[in-house]
Image 1: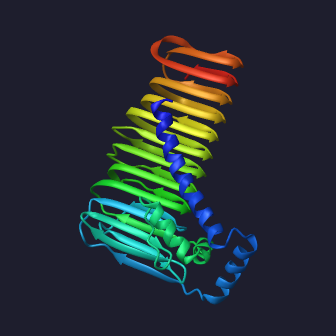
Image 2 (image 1 turned 45 degrees about the vertical axis):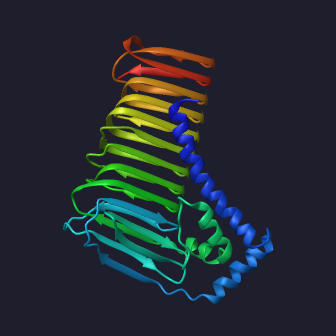
Image 3 (image 1 turned 45 degrees about the horizontal axis):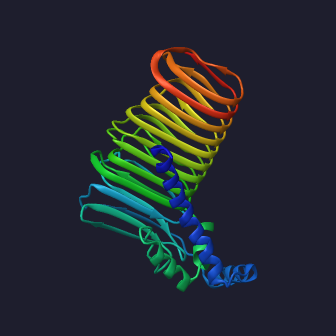
Length: 329
């Protein structure tokens, strides 16, 4: 198995494992009974009165890293126009947050009352969930809100965001050494980041969209179902993309090395360039335009092939079914 494939599969499997643990825990708490799940959810909603409260707070302690662990809210990270780090979120009877700066890291964790969400120690998290039950967690997902973090201009280290149910957005002019974004369900978007070395982005259901960035290192992006879009991306590093089902689009971008793995779904290039490329696709077409001639090595079981062969870098393409049609821009 190729290096890029291993990376994206490990990311995807890690997210799937968290989701599966959640489902198993729900059934375990209710003795694997659909009836008890429905009854508990109904009784819990009657017992708990929801009182929403919007929290606004400035973060004054210095930090270089950011970590957000979220259950249900939509997470947005963007530039602070006034130079002040500010956090806004909603708390209610189902959803509370812990916010702290320790050892140079701003950590924001959404909790189900007294449950500590520790994704590095899923066994411990599962134990707490089994003890407490999932009534409130289900309600939290039904009453999701926005969490908005604004960061002042500056060079940050790592930005890590994990979400169970909800989207993730990292906005323009955020500068970081490394950005890691993962969601079980929901779209993952990063746009206009500056001075970023590498980005890792993954979701099981939803899109991964990376736009308008110059990087110095690698990009890894994976989905189980959902598309992947790279638009106006420049990096001399390696870009590894993988999806089980979904379209992959690489638009107006220039990269060093590319590695693309797909089971079903089409691949579309628009005015794209890569020094070298390695593509493996089971079913789906590969088409579009590139900026310069390449040395194509194409293997296909069924499908027509039309490529502009030249003396550039080597592009290896393997597909079982589907046409390969690539033209010069």
